[in-house]
Image 1 (cartoon, helix red, strand yellow):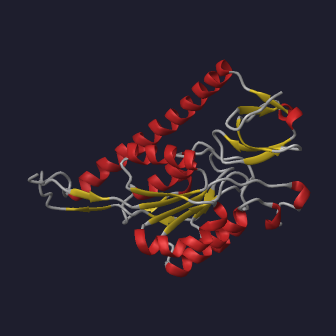
Image 2: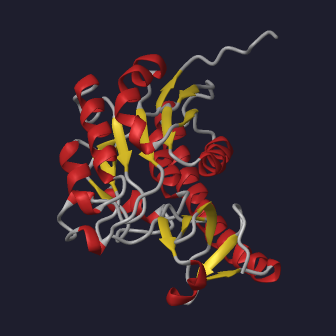
Image 3: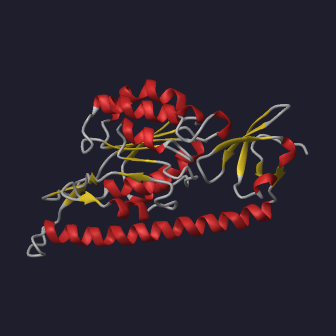
Length: 287
């Protein structure tokens, strides 16, 4: 079988449960990147099968259904939250004075440019201000301080791809993970800039990441408690919930996890305050 970079394939030994994109080829193995999940892998050529266009379309429909279900749930929750905010901002609707909102600003670092574009589209759809940066996982610790000083975000996302390898160690050994040590180190350096959990909310991790190390480094939320794969959009829905929650309120851990596609097996965290602030009066832009 002649493979090319960019081909969409499945692993026969795993019954093609996950679709991968071919990112590099050698004589002995093929490097793979998850098409819808944040996972890196490699496999011998004879274990791979190219997925047909029809099957890809069918799987894409299933993914879209999951994403749309999550989106509608998020919008439903946000609508209720907005109604409560309107009630409070207008003193129980006793005034019709219009108000404005300042939403939590997100700095999203992503090791995958395709996922970054996909995530940015959803942030924009949800109305969450975002500054996205494509940067390799290994370079994140060196770049984070200058990026924080430049963007001054309320919320930081540190993600990309990861993988746990049994051949390199146990689940407790961070050296057995592809990029977890870089995620944890980036979190530590971010906390040197903004130590307070409510001054900068941080999500970090990808598929199968070493959850405990990332949380101990100072993240509010991280993946992956059960070392499972997480969806490419999980970080978006999680931090968008924080961005759109009032700074007067705490974000319920269960509430924020139910707004993700993967759920509590893939993501965990601590109680965190929101960043939304309302103000008035609303001034119309003459232009």
